[in-house]
Image 1 (tube, rainbow, N blue to C red):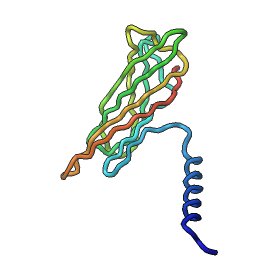
Image 2 (image 1 turned 90 degrees about the vertical axis):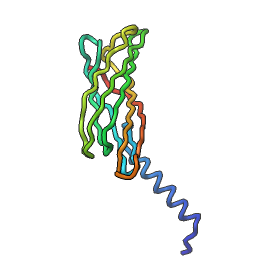
Image 3 (image 1 turned 180 degrees about the horizontal axis):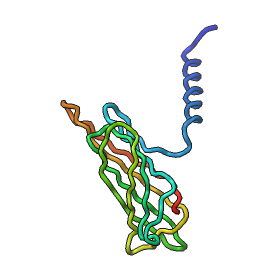
Image 4 (image 1 turned 180 degrees about the vertical axis):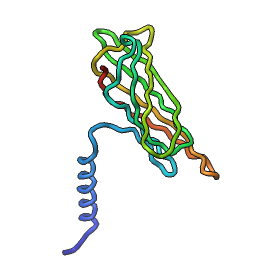
Length: 148
């Protein structure tokens, strides 16, 4: 049997397709470019605070930066109105998976959050100094989470 470049390309495409099919269904935020790793994902469910004036959202993260910043925007349709807000935090990194809770305050000029489904937009960025130079990166993911 003669192995040609065309067969090698076809086999690579088939294998790549198989890897894609096996990927997780939930989107995860990831910036991986050694020596810098920035991973973050909002966890469902988030919990309403003060009758919807805010929501506490757990974010699971892993990072190898000196520190990492996490911004979280939450948007939810409540009846005919839109509830939205921002929360952020800075976290320490130790290359292990950790969790933090970010409080997202509802915009005072909009609707309050309610039980249901919301869109969570998670943004991360950070830098790592290796002794010779800085490596910096950022990323964003949008996903749906439930509010309880």
